[in-house]
Length: 75
Image (cartoon, rainbow, N blue to C red):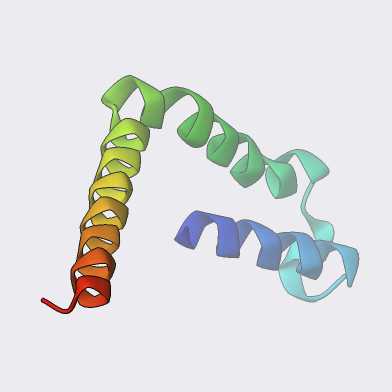
């Protein structure tokens, strides 16, 4: 997520021609976006982080639903 913020800041600085980023090549400005793409589309699925986080969220949702049902029944 930090890389995404940095990439957007660099892009804004390039478009606004602010600071030393104004003289950088567009290749260097867009490189963080390429790294983000590789991270989200290749590395995370290969490691399994996307599935783990989805399973964790699903378990939390199921637990919250059970708690809601218990409260509705009066337990």
